[in-house]
Amino acid sequence: MIKTEDLRRAVADALKYIRKHKDVIDAEVFASWNDLITIRLNYTSDIPCNGVHEPKSIQSYGLGILATFKKGSKIEVGFGSVTNDLTKEGVLDALMKAKRNRVYDPDFKALPDPIDKPSLKNYHDNSVMKISEKDTVDLGWKALDGSLKALNNRGHKKSIIIGGDVTILRERMAIKTTKGIDDFDETTSLTANITVMIENKNVKGTGWSMDTHLAAFKPEAAGREAAESAMKTIGGRKIGSGKHNVIFGNQPLTDIASNVLIPSLDLSSVNASNTPFLGMLGQEIASRNLNIYDDGSIKGETGSRKITCEGVPTGRTDLIKNGTLIGFLTDNYFARKFKSNLYNPIPRNGFRYSTNGRDYKNKAGISPTNVVIEGNNGTTRDNLLKQVDNGVYIGRIWYTYAINGLAMGDFTSTIIADSFSIKDGKISSPLKPNTIRINTNIKHILNNIIGITKKKRSTLVWGSGEVVIAPEVAVSNVQLDNIAGFLG
Image (cartoon, rainbow, N blue to C red):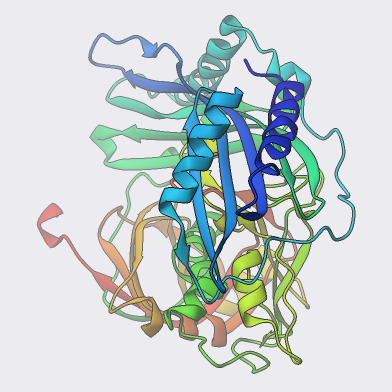
């Protein structure tokens, strides 16, 4: 384990060495250590199994340098990195790579300047940083026990498959630049995503839990939730194709936001003309009941960070307010490129994420943190059901992706679990999984909102780095298509 003090010393020594090179104008040195631990569940009631696999750990550390160089009358930009090396020799290697890779980029303006001070301090959990192997494995068993107890209490002991994983992410980073940024960050997060299948009933249920602190993390609750949601959908039926009033639960709303909406609300998509909201800043694009913002400084949320990977303090970026598009996510590069007299974006989303955390091998790009979706007139789920009257409650989807390109706004997704018909304003019969596909457009979703619950839940979907603090949202006239008729 690399200590934060080691990272801070490394970036300070590196910058001191880099300053001696006369062809370097400015430099940013970033060093990180990450550890991603995965405890995978694989329980099968009818086949001998271990239930919980041994933890898999991916650790990495190293250093990256982003520098600007003089080249005649032009300024060139280069990036280089080294792995498992914080020495002077490693710094020289990374700097030489940056020199070899340098290019002239007319859109690059400057490295970030220091701005306000971070609001988060000492928000990580030392007990997670020091967690033992035994305690790590116990988290997996707690998740599995939560599922099995719930199933066994209802008489389900056979034809059961329980999968998913518990993950622990530990991050340390330090950054120092010639522009005056000198800071560090330490992060811990724990997540559990559990799936329960009762094969002879052809049902699937899901549950999740996440936290930044070990004492508050409840993997057994995720396991229990997955089992209960599977049992609730026994006896599922199909529905006919057509336009339906629907309620998107926390997970479906998060899946749509992470795969379609949020990528459309960052300046890199604007730069590539790859957003359905091109040229619509300041215009009404959604129901006036809708507000969406990103805030990486919310205490206790697993998407929170003290600073970005560019050394800028995290904070709130409003994206949609009262249905009007008022901002985009951005890093320093695009914030400076799109700055004007009418729009001055603050780069609070410059991160270097990879599959195992903040990665020294990457240059900063745009990444969301905690995306909050809420309504001006929050209501209850019961009121949403009454407003929908007859329709569909969608509780779990997967394979959500844009079709015809992100700029068109069209997307598709498949309903896989935790979903029900709504009849006379109440939850009715469960839906048969994997027989219904959503085919609609993100603009249709935004502009046909019936209602939004006041209650929200922090939600993370597979493959996404951000947390979406999601309510339940009712939308009118959503196209649902019946599929997989051969399943009977």
